[in-house]
Length: 153
Image (cartoon, rainbow, N blue to C red; front, top):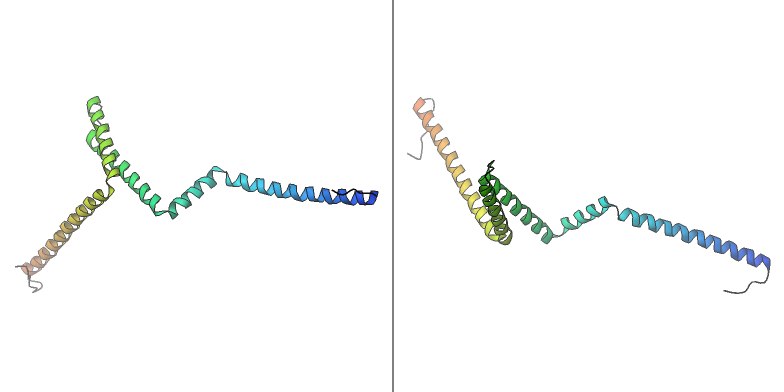
């Protein structure tokens, strides 16, 4: 700093320093408020969720883990039921662990099996729909109301 000779220069320098101190204090308070807001738990969770929603790897891992845990719990509940037998509960827990790990470690295989089961289900549903429509055609023919020929016979 420079040496000041007159009292007027000294007063002006003090005023400048007080103004600078006030401005820096306001900036520091604003930065503190921003840091405080960013560290709120809800902000952290929302930031994490936004990050998760943008990353396809995290999404697929989250879905895979959720499906494997859900399938394990469902398997245990189906096997164990409402039984209070300790052996059955132990086997249910081991079965839950096994199914959860199998699904989590082999998601592509489980995906293929799931697609195959859904394909069989849709095939069965389409056959059932075809049978019901053919039965209605026969009913209408048998009733004599409409003269529609059934191509399946």
